[in-house]
Image 1 (cartoon, rainbow, N blue to C red):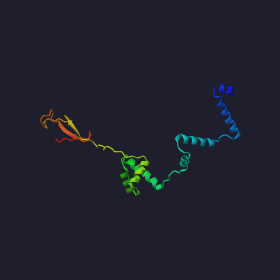
Image 2 (image 1 turned 90 degrees about the horizontal axis):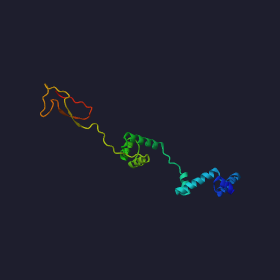
Image 3 (image 1 turned 30 degrees about the vertical axis):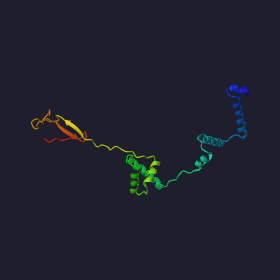
Image 4 (image 1 turned 90 degrees about the vertical axis):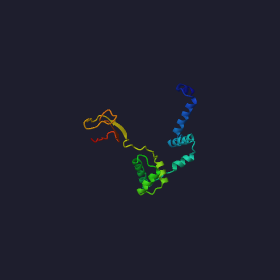
Length: 173
């Protein structure tokens, strides 16, 4: 046996172990597939530093069941949260749900939002166009009609305040 182990490049005790395992399997004394799965679970418990009883208690625990009413409320919370562009907090969410007929407190809304991983974000107000000061020079120059303002280079120089860049102003002539 040692010569065979040398020719394979393995230790002789490993070759003996392989031989014993093969004999046990052929005699029906070896580990079955279920036993191997169980052994793997126990090794995982040892690696994760979790007791075997805790693993089996976790495995036997049933998943929490929710009613159709709760499922509808969860779906509604997701929709309201997205419509608000992720800005609804638990207080406003509870108010909106109550207005839709759900009986929910702020704390329950907060727990559900945490379970759904929804956290309100503070948004910066969208500007609908900031006021810009624009100097319009020589768009229309009618020297005969308009009087030249004091200190200006052109007869049509005026200051305009625009809300949007594409906004058009009409001058009084």
